[in-house]
Amino acid sequence: MNSALIIILLFLVAAIFLGIRSTKGKDMNLEQWTVGGRGFGAVLVFVLMAGEIYTTFSFLGGSGWAYGKGAPALYVLIYISLSYVLSYWLLPVIWKYARDHKLVSQPDFFVSKYKSPYLGVLVAAVGVIAVIPVIVVQLKGLGIIVSQASYGAISMPAAIWMGAISLTLYVMISGIHGSAWTAVIKDIMMLAVIGFLGIYLPFHYYGGYGPMFEAVNTAKPGFLKFPEQGLSVSWFISTVILLVLGFYMWPQVFSSSYTAKNAKVFRKNAIISPLYTLMLLFVFFVGFAAILKVPGLSGGDVDLALLRISIQTFDPWFIGIIGGAGLLTALVPGSMLLMSASTLLAKNIYKPFAPQASEARIARLAKSFVPVVALISVYFTLNGGTTLSTIILMGYSLMTQLFPSLLFSLKKNNFVTKQGTAWGIVAGIIVVAYITISGSTIGTLFPSLPQQMKDINVGFIALLINFIVMWGVSMLTKQNEAGTKVC
Amino acid sequence: MKFIYILSVLPFVGILGFLPFVNRVTPFVLGMPFNMFWMVIWVVLTSIILGVMYKFDPRNREGEEE
Image 1 (cartoon, helix red, strand yellow):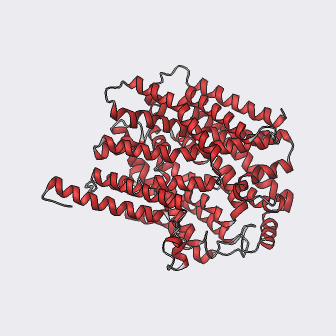
Image 2 (cartoon, chains in turn yellow, brown):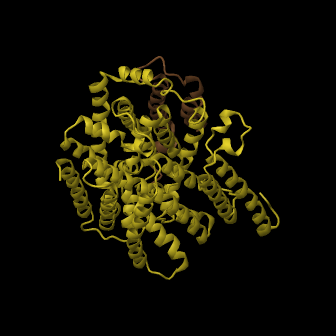
Image 3 (tube, one colour):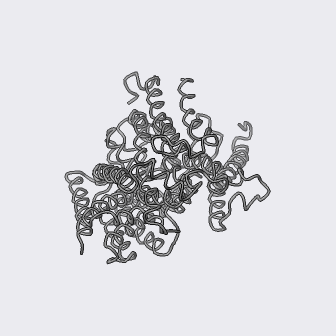
């Protein structure tokens, strides 16, 4: 075992220790375990939400995209920043409603708004299906970090198994309290490591940012611009809008907004959060620095760029620090994702069919689903082969399907019925599944359109069909119910 | 109230609406390609805009709705 691995292991032990400590003296019922008893102030909610947003995906995937695709990688920075503008309006409303109705999970919101427990089952199912790919991303990230930091001594599958087991133990012991405190350390570590790498590497290898970008621009002309087709300007605009709409639909993000003490927390956090996203800039700098220094990575291997250039530059002990920070960026979001998926399964999918089940039984069940979800995720991690970015984008397309019905549910006179919501979501999901499996783009579906239109993110088609079905079915069911007034 | 609605649209217009016109590498500003610099400036502006919104939002002034 080399010093890099020992240091990473120390990080893991420290995280688990913190998780155990934070639960001491607290009665862990379902509300405590999942939304921390609704007692978190601005700072903790901030780190908790940042914890879900800055995952291994931004760490490895962000630098990977900068390395492999150039300018289009900036979408990560922009969609997160713009999502905070949406949060300013959206989260206080959601939080207030959730508190007044004592909601614990995201599907509760739909159940309560549309008065249909089975709609909750559907929303929960969408959540679980979309969350699993994101857990896969965290496990893949863990696998990459551990196997790279071991300098090849530990194979990727072994590293993934180790990651999954630690993650499961961590969640079962600590719940959200552990996540919040580890998230504080994780954010500090990640800021320090990314800040250092993003400054040191460009200056060490090129003598500054200007010379680095000029060197990249000379070696790969056009790489720093959005291309004319493919990942073009219209791809960027449409993808960012789609991601912003989906951003707060994730069950784990949605329900961590429940942890806040008051509504002002969100509006305050919205102000500084975009500045915080600028941290991603340093992630991109690392990716750009790697282009000329560790050339030749392609396909899914672009995600290795950050670690490869680090290994080439630093001593093993420092790789341990980087790997430790990376481990936390997988552990914190990973634990929250695992927890939301298991809570969804127990509370929102099992419970509606067994209404007599006690609260304690549901809480036990939620915990026992943790290893099940982890196992399923390991299966997909070992058997899938695309880049982190592709997986995340698919998850987003699924989650965005909840946006139309959520938006309308916030209006006072909502014309959308529960049937409309359900069929709209189902139609959207089917379209996303078809698009993903067949690999369609707007270009392949409608080859006669001009190039700008062809590059529009295909997720919009799913959203449009979702909306049309939702509207149509709502109109029909409303007429049947009321018989008199339609709108 | 209307004023802050308009403010919250600004970042979208600045970043996404203007992108077709600023998609160029030169001139390099602060060492960054121009399109990247443009986005960074707008992320900073987004924070400032949200700060102004917070200041003018009546909901944040009167005590707290809980």
